[in-house]
Length: 121
Length: 107
Image (cartoon, rainbow over all chains, first blue to last red):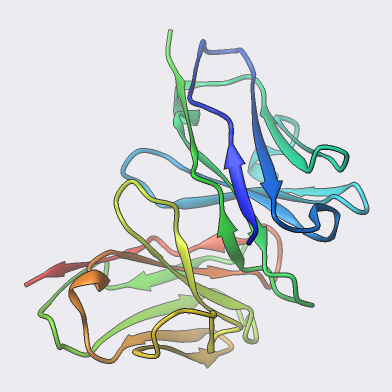
């Protein structure tokens, strides 16, 4: 059974960067597509981007373009999301999620447990 | 960007009720739509994808319908464990976007 386990909570200063990891187990990591979704306290869900590890190709939401980098290490079955130039509005729970492994489907069937990132001076 | 209008934002219902949640798109997305359930402090769970395909393990009281711009999630007989927040999500074009959410609360 595929599981995604994320790194622990982070507290960061404004202007700094954060890198969150997402380790996959129980499946073939290189065949997945992994997305990152965030949720500010009391708010809805926001898609940030995705990566196709086998191709090393990433796509990002325009809102985060230039500030977010999504990477994947096939050797350790781990995906990463790095967000730079942090501001208070980036305070949120960050989730990694696997995209349903079927053609033309962009729905997320397996989610990590979430990583709380707090940006505060 | 495809904008999504999800309604209602709050729905008060009783166990056993039939409830429907609507999701309307700013442009047509064929059937590239998913529905999720989220409980407090937990990650969302996939209920339906491709507008009407039930995810494995999801109870059959959940169903989805629609295509183009108008979609509906129906819970045929609300159970106690169904009180949660529900989101729609389009994956027709980047950026993938979510609806604002519908909280289903006990009446």
